[in-house]
Length: 389
Image (cartoon, rainbow, N blue to C red; front, side, top):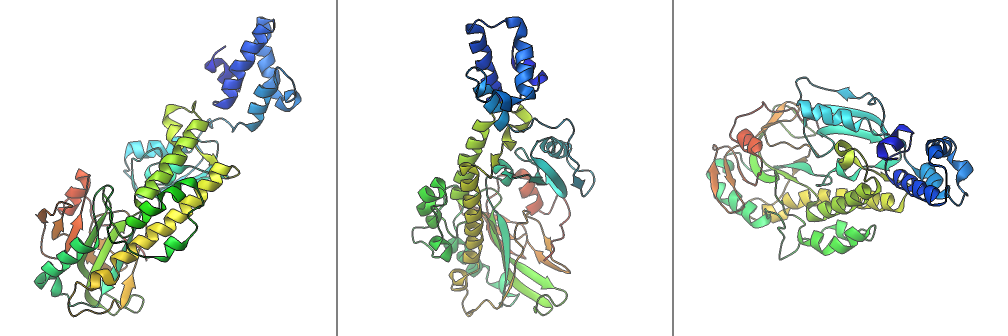
């Protein structure tokens, strides 16, 4: 008998399949009748608890009792916003909804292909967590800080703004600060998992850095067309930043994704990246604690961008009176924020310091590995999204 036979008889993939193979070998070596193999397997699958203490069948029966249900025959229903979405992104969502632990899903208008779960896809699961669906850059987000600086300074003093970015963040994989920043997140319990414990020093050195990929820091003009949270209508200089949980977040994802993959080695290839951890397991609880800590850490990085570290480079400016923040929106386009807009484009600095002239309305530093992102930055591609605050 092989895996196809086991699947036909209702044996779940993974540990149960391996134990079924062991049972077949032991059964034959013990002189069992080969013609009764299918009957034996059917009986154990139908009532595994009745065989849990059987010396020959017990391990197979226990694996069946502990096994998750097989993938669904039909995907669970999910909601989709928007039309004309990438076909493969929709197919990824369909496949994710076949998971036996899936209970609900949603697909956003900006959906595009991800690793296992599409970017812009949301999947609710029952008492489980899927590390790879949470993502490598756990809790990446964006923050805007509106500064009490004359709008003309963006055009007349780009050198100051450029120096501020060059001095106060770092780009590139593994980027870190020699002189470290301080934040209360470093006083949290970093022993929630072995990974966070091992990487605390690394996380400290990267606090306030931007990293790589599509992360950026940019000064631009923010125009409020109406009163927003006490901010009077007008045009202001603002700082917009996008970053995440850096190398430590990636290490958390890597470690617990591998643990999840190892528990379900026989998952179909299209579902392998969606292997899950039970929240009743030690691994699941460790990952959950590490994930929440990475959320706090990612949130701590962004205030460093908008802190006194930047303001001290801007002569004549002593305070940051107003803040507007929108976390978790992953785009590099012009922004509309409820009747207001942030204009980007302008002079960007790559990690190597090379200037890319795109206009005269903002100044920023940016690293992008995506041709699509570079196209959008150049003023091409799709129209700007609406961001609600």
